[in-house]
Image (tube, rainbow, N blue to C red; front, top):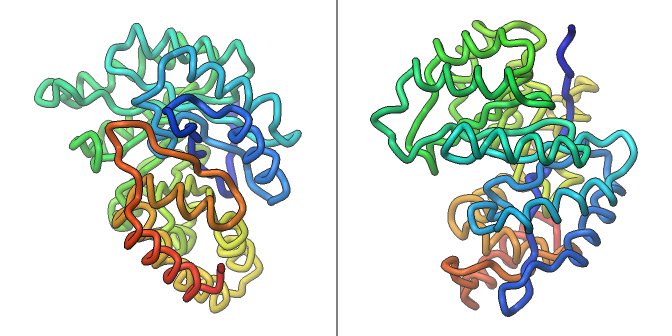
Length: 297
């Protein structure tokens, strides 16, 4: 059986909260409707930028239901279902599968970091994929997990019929080049940061799950569309123009900065959930200046 082939841009969608910390499903659905106007490949719900670690299971399932209800026909809905144990990850994965999710993005377990050997990771993802009702993608994000999955693990897991890809958020282009050499052609290697989007396209990567696509979907899509037309110069210029925005909303100011940028360009970022702190006024001014310089405001 052939694996699902993915191509295009996915925003790892933000989760709007109200001032008191409650989930704002109305704003979430409004964002999905607005993103539907762009030529996106789909959505990642419950990713790192969605503050998924702060959500209850009930909230997670509500967000998935909302995304599926509002999604554009043909859009692929990927859901972050990684928990620390196989039992809990499998439970959540199959619950979202039964709601209609298309695939599950699963974080590498990391709490008992020293025990997460190659053998442990291979056993975990293999058992999960064997029992999952939807295809699985691996999520490699050492920034949060302090675990960088090794090439031999990727090589082995990429050959499982129900493991269809991996999102790599390191931005490490040499590492991406290594993985491209060792995985089958039908394995979806996905770049997980807009800072590496243009270089990854140059390597042959065709899919990006990009935080920047929350607030700048048009530009993220245009980097790829112009590149695919052979206009490398324009693709590179767009990439460089929005690069400082990506740095601001994924590194310098984090999720509160990303949400503020969304608010400024017509989407609803909403509040962050504690213990994350709201953005200070000087940070808002800095983001406004970056957006203005990029021609977004």
